[in-house]
Image (tube, rainbow, N blue to C red; front, side):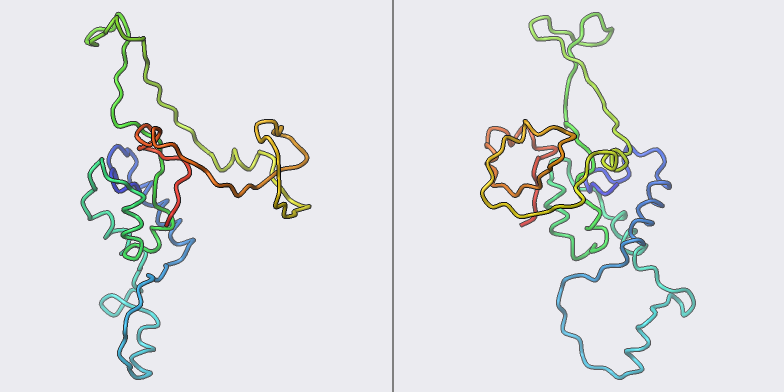
Length: 201
C-alpha cells in the first residue's frame, strides 16, 4: 500500500493493512516536516493553544491519520514511475509515511509463460519453455532473528582482504562491510522494478 504506483490495488484485506500501517505510524510518532518556515511572533496564549490541536473543539487531532488519508486520496502514480524518487519528492509532505514507504515487493511488469499443451496459451516451440512462479515470503523479520547476529568484540578494520563467498553462515567472526560498488549499466533495465543497493542522495 505504500508503493505509490499501486496503493490499495490488488489488496484483499485493505482495512487490515490500513490498521497495521497506522499502528506502525503511531509507534514512530508523528514526524515534523523538514521545511523551515518563517512564523510570526505570537503571544503565550496562542502558543499554548497549539499544544493539543483539536477538531471542532472536542477530539484531539490525529495527525498521522490525516497524513495517511491525504496520501490515500492522491491518485496512484504511473506504473513506469520510480517510487523511491516519488518518496524523495514527497517526504516533507508525508514525513511519517516516508519512514515506512518505498519498495515493498519485487515485481516484473510483464512476463509471459511459454508452456506446451495449455489451452488458450500461445505456445511458441521455437522459444524455451518458461513458467511463472510467484513467491510469497512471509515473516522475514522473524527469519532474520533466527540467523547469526553479531553481539560483541566489535572492531574497526581499514585494510581487509577477504572472500565473502567463503564466510560460513555459522562463522564465529562476522563482518559489516562498507564498500564501493560498480553497478553495470547493462543490468539497470533488468533491475528496474526492484533495484539492488538503493540509496537516497
